[in-house]
Image 1 (cartoon, rainbow, N blue to C red):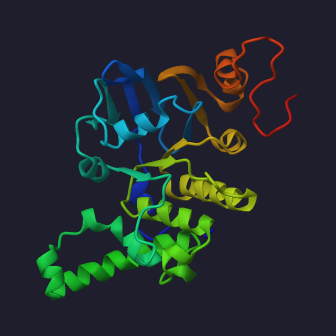
Image 2: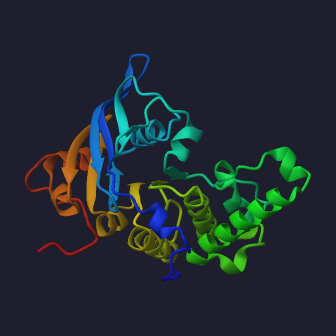
Length: 282
């Protein structure tokens, strides 16, 4: 992991505004996928959203990123309301998302995949780009240079021209994060970034997320099932169960919350051990 943030990016990406979810409810017919969900991701922190399968985590991400419309409630980034905006507009307002499933053609290079994240920032139209007008060529050079900086930051610089389909799984997941970073977000949504990874790849991705927070100042909202990784990385954790918030606090607080123990283990007995943080309990 490069210790140097992409030139010109760190300052522009740092955000002084929280991401706030206020009373969001999502209904699909009679089913409430989310019910009055609220959370606040503070600027420059890693905020994890956890819960059993079907708890509503992906639905929440889809509302924040504009894929789903909330039945009620709202999402704000600073003073800007995100709910009701289309996904491309949410991206333009500063929310980048790295998906659990790898996007992009396996035949496209790492650089081309990262460049997908730059498209909404380009002023040149397809016609000008196709005709190779000088202004279009100049703009493309600038965006490719920025994409290379992001690749270097994520230790992908030596793989820029490699088709993503032949990369190791961990590298392909980092390309997905790089594509999201290329949108120049103020808030980065990471949907199960270590799903399917081995221990070495998980450690590398954890270091990547720490570097994004430390070097770029970006707020990271994280959905993940690896509790050891979450509890060692997150500044704050919100727990969902059946579409409702059942706990919110620091990793230590959440890991000892009886409501969280019930959600994960199906019991609220006092003798039930705390949810594992990957660290020895005092």
